[in-house]
Image (tube, rainbow, N blue to C red; front, side):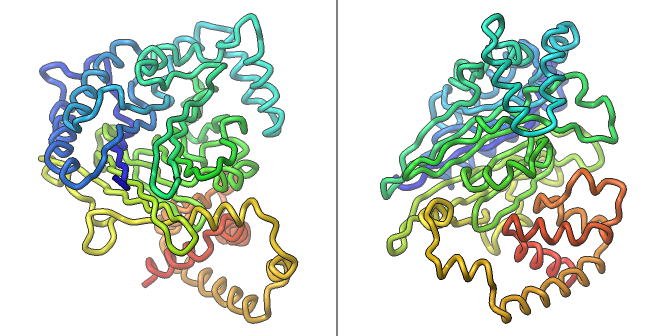
Length: 430
């Protein structure tokens, strides 16, 4: 078959009391299983597995993973696939904070990495720690129970295997390669020390894959890039290397796409109950097609959301293409690799360095329209647009957007999402 498909869940948060006779989330989990049995299997082809982007447990405890394993066995049975076809990464709730609280060595190692002033310095400290012959796995002690759970799925992590990969064949000599990343190396009791400050995680450059011929990279990571320290130094490299990026953590479904990559921050399957309690998960399919000499990866994302009466999961039509149960994204892989890896000819280089007066004028007019429309929106609408496009920076905290609009516009251009920024603001303004 030309298409391969996955079920994508995040932030399930199994507690040690999950599954008891009075568990209020039993019905929610059953709704996921029922939705997959009656709907996912009907619409998806060639289902290859379940993707979990972190926070499988609530406190990184053995009992929580035992309960999670039972649920996943039922889930894979409903899909008709082997129960080992689960691909997962740790989240901050998969970290056992008791370990860093009780171990001076673990906590000190984490603090040393966090204190790095540059990305290169952080990488150097990480390497030094993992080459320490006395205890190379020190930084993985906090996810020991996650590793005991994940080893059955070959998704455990250690100093010899700081990431994991799994490959799937597509048509036209293309393959899809899953990459499991670890964004929780320094996660500990300090995560919520200051509720007004978003703690920045450290993800070393060694976790970013090398280019591989005929390969589409799909990453699975818990913390979205906005939660990474040194993200400004790593974002472009990440987007060039990894074509589809799947995250969790935020408990809200946010999609960002441009000509280089698709980013999905998934909603939570078990979000914290509150006024805006909205459980979500996704189905995702991948297919390689060819037009002329170029190969395209076609991604269909089927967003699922708990119905208003909490009876079952249904299509989230607000986030789908018109008259469809999914939204579609296409990426010309061959063109992207050529743009990133081949030297441009002199004429092309000059055209990039010296845009024509018409191009410059058009861009100037678009900026003026964009700024005008942007400041006609409410603050909430402005923030929603910026967050969806990863255009928010920590240094903007406490500042009005009018003070940083030039920096925002420059970021949008650097990240190749200026046109999408323009269109989103225009749509909300209208």
